Figure 1: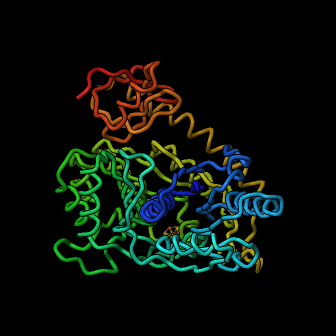
Figure 2 (figure 1 turned 30 degrees about the vertical axis):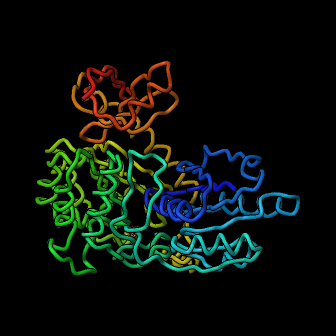
Figure 3 (figure 1 turned 180 degrees about the vertical axis):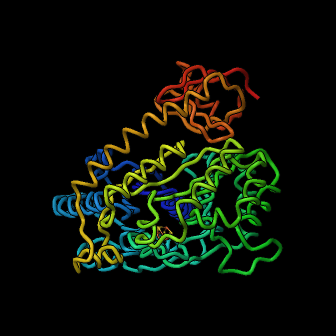
Length: 456
Ligand code: SF4
């Protein structure tokens, strides 16, 4: 039997898939493969492969965007139709789709769990016996679950799940619910073990890492993100930790302490602060708990330590006027982020925005969202080249964390992605994965290209 895990969505979902794979691996002596789908438009599912033989398919779902959800539902329908003609029988659906909308489980013959990954083996066993297993819950603790890393040099470690906000457009909240922070001791122990097992890069994930600790009593740290990061900085070994998404209100609250801790070489100088709009009126309608000025203060301060800034923008929010949109453009031009996750607004069932549109208080215009998305993408492409050019001739240490089509992907202290032409012998390239090296950036356009100066 072979297990295939199809993972949609964010780093948190990827972490859940690693937990699922770890739990399966302990119980079943089977091969496990993961297909990671971070850009659903470019994903061409090889259905023959998925449907062949005695495979077990687990689909870890995402609902953050309507097209992603539609694509997943289409795939589920196709698989169900094929079951009648000898297609794959053993299927478990998990993740945010059933967690936010449990009623979906009644529409399919498959087994379902939510984010309660530790129930995966029960679901598998019952499914193999030909039964339908449905238990949709939230997992209490994920840190200490055994993980199966698909890239042994990268360890994804959730520090919390859920958040304390109630953003009017967000369906993630329906799935991941209120904040559950994990205990600092368990987090640091898990990181220690991962580093001992060879991990060089640690992704600390959560829906909003900035609110870590608000819901728990910590034993020996100040119970917040700063206390946790300070503790993580004491973990022995050479590794780089990337701190996941942090809302601007919390980043501002802890700004000076965060700047100090990000200077520690155990952390990438990389901050993901999703601003979502350049208009305070829209931020209020989105029920975000900060002002544009707060975001600017955080971003500017992080720039003083040469940190990379990643942010998110939603265009075409139902109350967004041309003027509001102009403010988003101005903000992007002012801050010049290194990464921009741009989304068109989508109506997500069960959210405040959906209710306001249904009751005709707000109006949703998909055409406007599309036009604005194209415009802001074009502007960002230029900013991105301008940002990259500042890195030309930079020399310093990088960590090789991926190989894509014989290109080595390295990350420098600011988590900048640097492409290095690999050796024609693919095996030699594999040996370089997880290695720290000295490199020089020799080309800086849409992508940064570098050459190796020396291995450490
Ligand atoms: S902070 Fe807002 S956008 Fe993020 S998960 Fe929570 S409710 Fe959703």
